[in-house]
Length: 406
Image 1 (tube, one colour):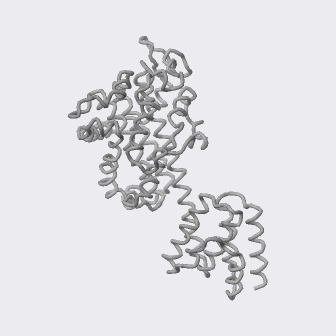
Image 2 (cartoon, one colour; image 1 turned 90 degrees about the vertical axis):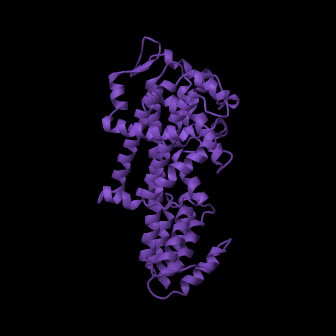
Image 3 (tube, rainbow, N blue to C red; image 1 turned 180 degrees about the horizontal axis):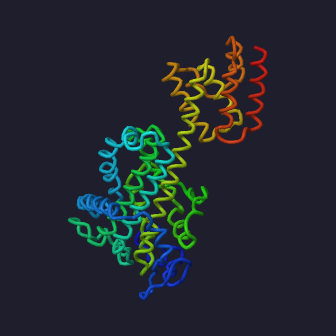
């Protein structure tokens, strides 16, 4: 999407929405959209003076951050690089598993995550209402001409728009981090790979991810076209380039100001539901990884043959000549847990290109005693990514026959 595009091109012709009645919405006397009471209650549930105070305080922090940006920082996407350093460095120092334990001792992670997502959505909706004055078609044109602005200061219209963009970006980034911490998924944000993983999850940088997950159904019908447009075509070609992410987030948020005369309702609804969907996406990703980590730890704890377990697990994973994401995740965590719990590091497996079943059978035959733990490993590994394939069943059948003979 071109940041400087005319409003009527931003939503594939949906700019006319401001003149069309939809269920749950009414036309105000200016020709813009106003929410019905039922829709307003659904959008603004849980908002109170305490929430508003928190949002106002955080908006003040965001405005101070924006004062340090130049027009080039915004146009190039460099603002996102600076935000990453500012938004996560101090935050991650104080927010860890112990931080949440002190506040929610004994409460299951799922319950805490659900509340964090709802709270973030409330804050996002409140901020959208406060920033709604920035949502005019004039800002789109200003964004397009930003390169000609004075290098000494960011134009006032852009600064107002950037408060919303930076606030929501920081909110969703920290929400994804909170969810990872609550599910005890290890993230080392000094590691570029882990940092990129957090960014991808926080901003659902994968084309059509939200639609494929089906969570779009939770969004009111009137908003679905806008949400789908917001999340469409989000694959970034220059992976791990923070300025590219900054430009992508800037362009994506222009959707909220691409419809003239809509004002507060669209700002509130879009901020709320994009934050809800981002939070649910982060929950799906990190909860699944937590499930895989839990499986790896359980297998390692029960295993009497940790080194053989790794070979059998890899044989089952590669049986159908393809490696699913969950299978790759499992073997990575299984190797880590076996190293930590059993001090086993198998260099031969580490350097292996093609696994030979005969080598696994040789290792199996060399092990005396009960091998039921190995059979359990094979069964659990085969189901980590869903139904067991025919190739995996064949490997497990052969394994079971050999264990019986031993």
